[in-house]
Image (cartoon, rainbow, N blue to C red; front, side):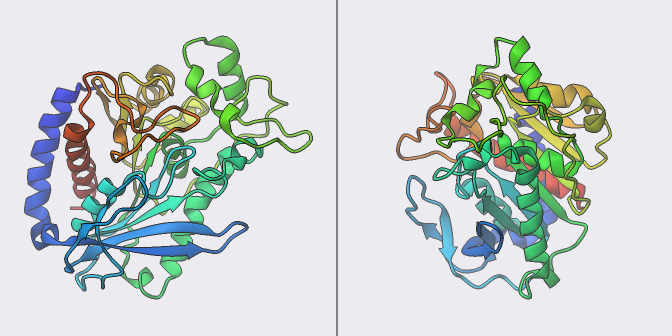
Length: 344
């Protein structure tokens, strides 16, 4: 793994290369619309896309994305489609800064609010379907966008990627081909003492499991279901930020063939890096991997104007000495550069 200093140097170089490749696309702003994807529970998706319309900071709860709401899309060809998957209990705006940056680069970005695992409802955590349902929701969003008469014809089929944070990191790695064995979670939590954030996640779900259904993450679980496999071969590149990953089998990680960028937070009290992001890097040596020095679990999220209490802690807080405002532009450069490098 590389250090954050090396990461920043590489991000600057990659960003310069991406700028030369992107040309006029970098002068674009981000439009914002909302898409509803039908399903058992309709999915809310924030669509960020390139536009020439003026953008401004729009107060939206604790965030102020800089966007042009409802603006017309730029007629230039899209560079691709990027799905964004938030962490447990999050929202489609958790990574609005990254979404607007990618939209300005010429991508259509679809940030999903995961039904049953968002700030209003975490019932899916105790449903027994968590590990299969989360990536399936992303696939349904991809299906809807490719079938959409406005966006589908403009999406290059070989330029589709995904970014996920925390449980979203799990979700996008599953799309890339990693396979989960849910019983690994229970076994892990019986044998380690230094990953309490992961082992306690289900306790904040706020829902009572159905009879005979055990919470997804609790150690005292029922016999685990079969291995979960939810690949989507349309996904051609993946960025996993502080991913939840201990449930993946080593051999399935090693078999991933698409480019992967994995970033782990050094001071992560929620997902101990050695069992999650570091575990991915160890079993997927061809992945680009880095440890962000001093970062906490929520370092990859857009800053909030108010505290954001969650089952995993206050998502607005940072470890002492860590400057999220300084880090996020570097993260945006790194992610934008990663995708640009795949699709030159």
